[in-house]
Image (cartoon, rainbow, N blue to C red):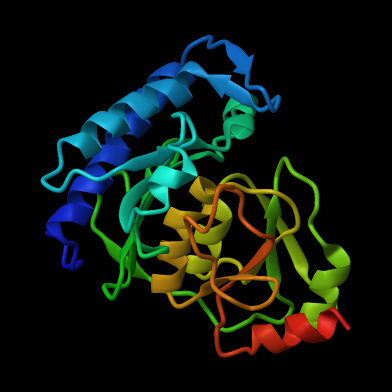
Length: 271
């Protein structure tokens, strides 16, 4: 039996993510087709299958809340500006990695409460790894339905390990060198798994210079924060959600070692 202090809600949401992962893997094993959205990002049947599973699962929970998802039309700002609690979902984060068949894609489900992620589930369908967290309860992971193990981020390594995007540019090498005081080791990785590498003490930093959407980061932010890390905008403030009409995040840095004054380092880097 698991000794992890998972609440009934977190247990249910983890099961929903794992069900979505099974639907994704059925299509991953097939000769799937790839379409493109208006922004030219890829879309597969797996995105839509996972969306269907997650939407049905969340609708069946005791507390029915609004949902914002990458694969669903978002409510107008005039409506969602009044939301205090809602689900924020990316049914398949890393579709480019899915299309490449490199396994580096995830299912992300987050509960947002007053602009903060207070519950997060990140599932990597290919490896079977599930990462979960809930505010005040720590961060946990398991593989293929095994026992839950607590995870914790680490003190900044020397040299630091920097998780970077597998398919997107804008890594910000110059800023990283300023922030880290010299050289570092790069570790490319797709999707929200970059945050999970930091949460489980396999990496130290992830800097994102370029656009991301709120559903790309919320679940993994909760995992990383509960593992002892942080996700900060480039002014040093934690990422917040449902801030306005746009669902795009500001540029950010995810870190494992919060004993470092990242806000001061960021301010000095701008001088």
